[in-house]
Image 1 (cartoon, rainbow, N blue to C red):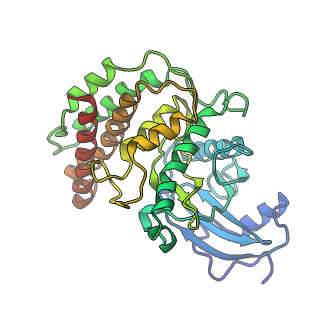
Image 2: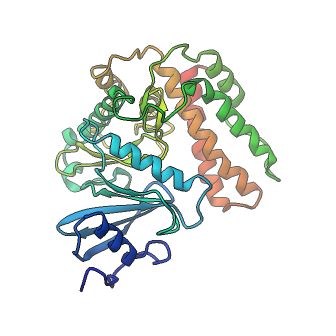
Image 3: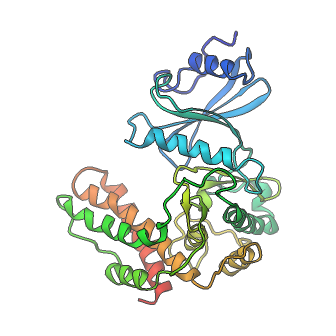
Length: 352
């Protein structure tokens, strides 16, 4: 098979990613030029974006493109995500290596980018035997996540070329944004209104207790155990993935989300249903981060409660859409249950 032929096992409609155009694009950029694409497979993961992994010239790549029915900001999201990965090169943050980006939409009908494949496993898909049988490796999983997010928060976003990547009033916008999101669901026919624990009280508490000062930095924006890949031999974090929500803001937002969603028998917001006996505790994650940062963690409960409030507000949208007949009822019920768990977690932290 020549490099210009379409692989017989190409896993995606060529209207979404045309392999012949991809090969020509890679050739023009000098990426394993002249070599065929082999072993292509469609990856599943935490977003609606398409991920195609393949080998070429002895290296493994992953192409990332928006969903078939693009959102209005899908192309810009691809460009931003590629820019973050490029900025992280050489840092202590485990991440997929940046290879190349196509910002123009003419070639494939969308912006897309190419990154190096990460050899690792997604914990919500199940732990490999090497991890399942070793509590020390299970423990390492959480510790390495806390180390990675501390390393991200320690980066100078101006020095790595992301000085214009976010807005300085990031923290001030959070509570009004998510409270407004909840209020907007009233527009769905059939939705009876927000029925989440202490929804009004939580919004009031978060606004009243918002930290008055913070140090900006790079945030991932959706940091939890389903958005990282782990080394199956050691339990170390092999790569943080899904950077589409990355921006410049308060990096403690990421730590708050890690703590809010961390699997544990005492956490009602253990949304991934993981219960390994060797997992690090909440306090161990917090102390690991503290040992790798100069940031003030005295308000970490606020960040943890905000993370649960934010995600619960987002998930409740599917319940509202289901009430209006715009989403499957079973999905609405499942995500409403998750939103209740998140608000319960936030209310417990806030004491409301």
